[in-house]
Image 1 (spheres, rainbow, N blue to C red):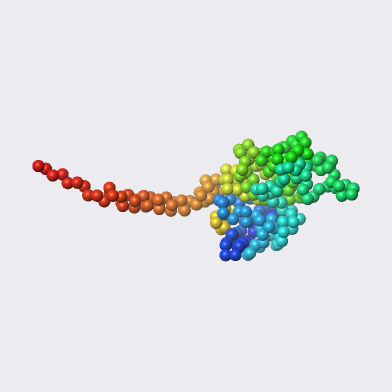
Image 2 (spheres, rainbow, N blue to C red):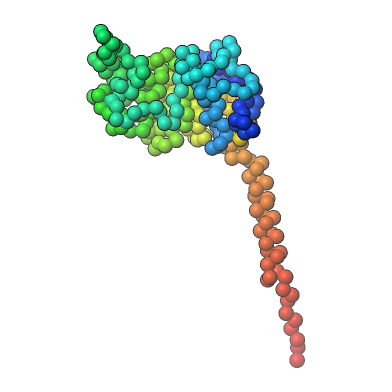
Length: 276
């Protein structure tokens, strides 16, 4: 299968701070979901900002559809077909669904005026395609649920030609039902042949929908895995730091043993019983 996106030994430095070091992973074409997993501070957000043109890598190279690319801005990445949906969604709550959908890319009619009739129709149709019925496209986005807002941001990226969809913690602040709504839409995008890079720290959300996994820990890669080669439990263990937890457990036991040995009760000799 052809590779849509590939990172080869990508590193990113901010002065003396190493944000990423020698990261390699692949996103295959034909509708594949690659999950980037890691705890807070693992480097997930830095990695996607490199792919979406916000940052440039300090070392390594990025291949897109088999060709080496350099994105100098988010606009460069979008023009190539890479759409990023960040945690803040880049939506304006007081603006309408339609205006948020077309923000910066409004369809126009004569004299450069926005064609609201066409825009309303497209926004309503595209939201309906993903199972969200917007009765009034002029309603403020702030009246929508968190899951619906996520889907709006994703639908917008797809409509404007995203070949790769990057989702940064899309279910982090959502409940179970709303998370399910977003994950179903990710599955729909995959069925349409769109490559998805899903950034999350929730293995229970990632495992059912992903094809591949890349695990990050403190800016370094713990490996790239195909789903058939790794279990949910193994991923959880690696994310939690299995060896680190064992060392921590050992240190805590040693500390408890040391404290017990130092206690006054442990040092005081037993009283002698004198017979009269």
